[in-house]
Amino acid sequence: MKYAYQDRPKRSLGQNFLQDGNIVRKIVDALALRSGEPVLEIGPGRGALTAVLLERTPRVMALEKDRDLASALVRKWPSLGVVNGDGMSFCWEGVAPEGGIKIVGNLPYNVASPMMWEILSRVPRLTRAVFMVQKEVALRLVAGPSTKAYGALSVWVQSFVRPELLFTVPPTVFVPRPRVDSAVVAFVPAGPGVPAADRPALTATLHRLFQQRRKQIGSTLKGAWSQGVEAWARENGVERAMRPENLTPAQFLSLAVLLRDQERATTG
Image (tube, rainbow, N blue to C red; front, side, top):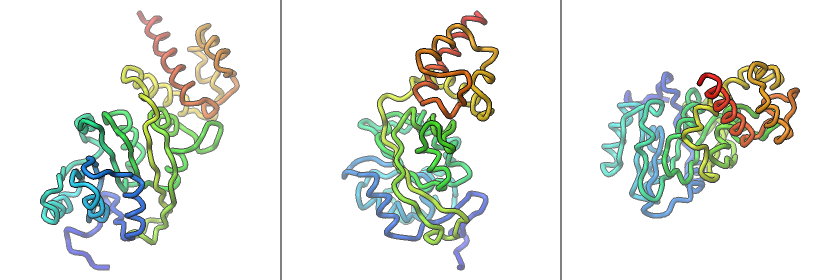
């Protein structure tokens, strides 16, 4: 297929343009947009999702890293708020309209996981999000404790939202076609999430334990297994021989706070 220069998919940006109108409408339907409700689209590309979003609400902002595509979007929809920027360095804290915001996007496979990590912990008043990601990543997002797919990303996401796998998407609906299946997931906030003051501790504990996910918790935390950790383990029904994937998100958070406070008390 031939493209105009500014429309040509850029491999360096992981661009795969969605071409199927039915899939587009299913994604937008999953957002449950009300007229006048603000929405941020990540990586609009040629605007397949954008066109349908603008049919539902005039308050659409688009974050597009590709300068050529960002300019084309402005020309096509002058009322569209377009930011030419990178989602990995974007100021997510600035996305804070009163009443909340919804976010949608076909996320590049190579940055989907870290971008979702940042969005969930930094966007104030997120009311709903719908993302298309690699199917393997989607399965990790919704995985429960004691399953193979459950990991640090699962715990982090489920500490902020309730993830739901909506449907899978074949490679045939993209140009160019990716080599793997995709899936669409929805995020619905589940309570207040992790307190801001506790997020660094949770991040550190997740990295510490899941970097050695096949090791028993007692071995990984050998130097930190104090009387306080022993008491925590008894209260939570956790044994030293368990592995990280056996802990729930709530247990990870309480353990992270305990380890942080314990270290602060020790270092003074």
